Image (cartoon, rainbow, N blue to C red; front, side):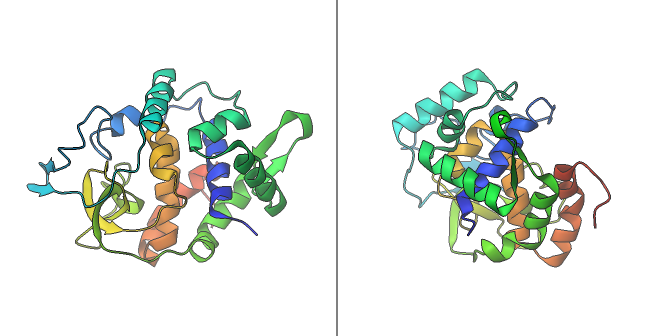
Length: 240
């Protein structure tokens, strides 16, 4: 049976495969927009949202240890490109999971058909299967309900990469609860507990996970509007 972290690992491998592409936005660009800069003093947790003319006060407990912040800074210093020579050890560190968890997740993803084993040449993402699973299965296998109003990292149609594409369908946007988030919204559970840390070093992974959340919580209209973006993962504009 697939677990949420198996899809997370698959998406991270896809991020590695596409690391040579110019995605037009970096994780550093998202700092201050989707989450607070690491150097910000969390004792001053209120954040003024100039676009909405309101103060957002966090009720979320800080869940980042200093080691996590140091790791994020280290990964950002290395940059997001030229990572096609990835290893499971690097993957585990960048997803903030254990090495054994990364290996087990990859094995389950191979068994489910999301990844294809190439022997000594490693694994590749089975993109058609991944697209089909996100479109038809993610909302069932990894269903989540909307929660309370919190401070968090915007996701689904509210993520910065999508917020100019989709018209907001609710007063409060969906967010992953996080004390370092910059948006006041409706809480939804991230795909996995380490997501809020992992996206801070990988803007492409953030894009993918926000896209997955559209298919986890979005309306039928939002899912239809997201289909061209989903098809980009498959490498074709015309799957239906």
